[in-house]
Image 1 (cartoon, rainbow, N blue to C red):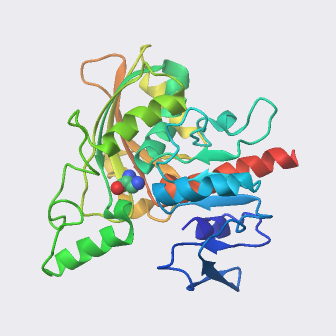
Image 2 (image 1 turned 135 degrees about the vertical axis):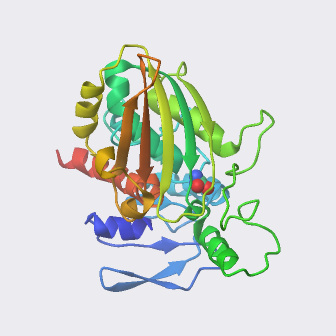
Image 3 (image 1 turned 90 degrees about the horizontal axis):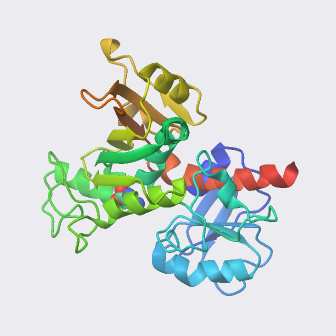
Length: 320
Ligand code: 2RA
């Protein structure tokens, strides 16, 4: 997905190498009309490579990202391996682009891409946080089966065809159902996905005092993740100002005219790089709180697009 997004965004690539495990090695990708054979990496694979986009799970990243960094490659890692490492920045380019660079203005050699459900939430909240300062977030997610990759999608499709399942990829049947569990439960009763939303939001906003109360839910949808977000601020909010801020924030598209049934839905956001916001309204009682609905394609802005945008920021700086 990352190389397709790089191609769609016309990222300047002179040579592309593709690496994967034995299972995928030998297959071919088409990039700019040239065939690229997928290889199993070795210690020399990253020699002469400027940028590495890693998206093969935490264990592959833990094994190979240090090797790539040692070879001088700038790595953007889409796994959870380094996200909460204090020495590794966690970056959403619309929100904390400064974190890509060290005090000398050089990019860090290893940069983490946040989890998809965090990315779309912090993009929607950033302009409001800058103006009103967030105190508390209560978020419920409606996450696409594509969050579990190809196998998540195939599980939905085979269940819809009524094929018998040995075990359920989404913990319970997902066809004609919803499942209030994304990833494994931790001892505190929250899932790993939920704690990612808590910890990553605080790291990206550089504010551990923000309270985040998440419930993450899998729904039988492909095309994107949706989120219902209640957010409480330190200052009183003015809804007109909220709308102005959302409208003028890069990377956000406001679709909000309930009287004409205009609000974001995953089908419309599929394949898009932006985050979509609608149903923005004051809380019924709290003068410092609003509710909003946020949708994004989890495979694009939630993963590949965000990674490529980090590289774009680096190129922009080098060329400036
Ligand atoms: C999911 N957020 O939707 C995860 C993928 N990283 O399952």
